[in-house]
Every structure is written in C-alpha cells, then in structure tokens.
Image (cartoon, rainbow, N blue to C red; front, top):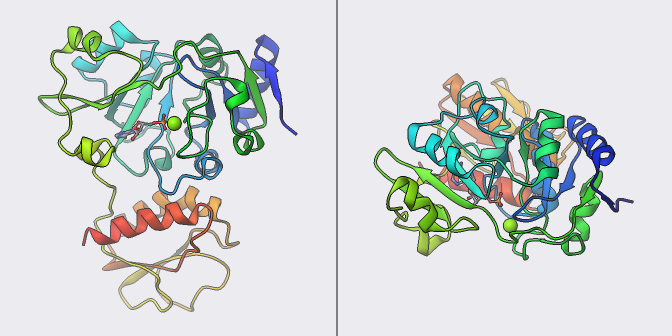
Length: 316
Ligand code: AMP
Ligand code: MG
C-alpha cells in the first residue's frame, strides 16, 4: 500500500533508488504533481501510460536538471539556448530534435524524432533528477481526461497504486502545466499555453506562431506529425504472407517462415507497448515489403497500441 511521505533528503534518496530500479514515483513539481519514471526505460514509460489510462500515446515531457543534461538528449539550437538561459529551471518545455544516440525510450516521444524537455524549478523534482542522474518522464499524476493534481490529495488512487513512493511537498506553487514551444527553421510555435506567459517568451524570441490546426485538434499540430514507419502495415493479420515481416502478439502465433518479432509472447499489453516503437523501427530498417501485425486486444494499453497502429497504417 503506497501513501504519501514527506519529501526530505532521506525519502528523496529512497525515491531515487526506486526510479533507478525502474519503478514509478509520484513527485511534486512547481506546475503539478507528476507520475515519474526513467525516461530511458521502455518498461517504466509503458507503465506510466498504463497507469494514466490514455487511449493513445501522447509524447511525454522529459525532465532534466538543466542545460548540460539536456544536451545529452537533444540538439539545442541558438533560439532554444537563449530561452533556456532565461527561463530554466521553470515552467517552459521545449520540443527539440532528439539526438540519434539519446538514451531515451522511443515510447516517451511516441516514436517521434523530437523530444520535449523541461528543467523543473521545484527543489524536490530537481533533487530527484540529480540523485538518479536520469531524465524523468513525468506526466501529471491524474487519469487521462481528469484535472491535473496540484495537491497530494488530488492524485488519483490508480496513479498512487502504480507508484512505489509518493513524495508530499504540499501545494504546487504554479498549479498549471508548463508552456510548450516547438521550433521550425523560421518560427517558434506555441504548442501549449501554460504557466510561462507568452509575453515573457516573446520578449526573448520575438512573436510566437500558432500551428495551423492547433485550435481544431487541441494537439500540437503539424509539428507532431504522427509517427509512421516507411514500410506499409497490414493489421489484424492471422496469416502472414511471403515478403512480410510479422509483428506478433501472444503465445499462439501462426507458423511462418519469415521474420517474426513478438511484442509480448506472454500476451502482456504493457510489455507490448514497451516494445512497440523499437520493434516497428527494427522491422522498418530491415526493408521488408510489408509489416503484418497480429490482432491486439482492445483493452488496457491495447487501445493506445491499436490507435497508433491504425494511424500508421492509414498513411499508406
Ligand atoms: P504532459 O502530459 O504534461 O507530459 O504533456 C506533454 C505535452 O507536451 C503535450 O501537449 C504533448 O503533446 C507535448 N509534447 C511532448 N513531446 C512532444 C513532441 N515530441 N512533439 C510535440 N509535442 C510534444
Ligand atoms: Mg495532464
């Protein structure tokens, strides 16, 4: 049974050990309480998605201690560097090109080639990152579609159940999420308004643009082009064909001579989610005619897996 414990130097070390062991921790930040896990661990990130019961894989914000750590994960351009110099640590998230060798789970950015980075100003969040020396994925500690938790008593029981340790640090001082920015060659885009005001940002980098379809979809628009492999996908396949690679699921796979990767031989949807983007990328690189995907049950994380697969298949 997990309950909140006061955040102090001892419990922060305990929490850091849990995070390094791949477990999840509820941590305070200056914006909202987050369900944190090692952003480099497919399994930890999959369990965050499972706990939040999101019907799709939205990319998560990766929390770092500051610029030097951010440089391990992303290409920091000049505009990003001046925003970081002015506003980090603080409620500003930057969506940046991910370094190819970045030690991050592909699931944390939902298979995209970008990563959203932020350095939290909250001393507990900062201390946890320093103590683990890990980048932490930490979406708000509430179920998908519910209000973000800004006090420990608002954290939903399902998320508490998913965490090994919950650190209590009272109310979050800001209480709203970070502002999210993205970059194109010429523009800086406001992808999500948040705790850092537009005017403050514009004083540093000039007028912000709004992605064209932002208002309609509420999603970060064109910059969040949906991940799709280059190889066409065929879904709900029971009998793979010659020339195809099989992305299997579960113990009962069809007999097949060709290439097979099994998302989870034991039929575990959290394991399947953890493997999804890495396995798709691997099969994609191998240059098969098509990737045949076995049926994935539409329950738990299966809903999010099917959502991504359907979108990827529709691109062809
Ligand atoms: P949160 O649930 O607080 O972690 O919110 C993450 C926000 O950042 C959402 O609005 C995401 O869509 C956005 N985001 C995270 N990563 C990316 C990315 N790689 N590209 C575009 N938007 C992103
Ligand atoms: Mg939220």
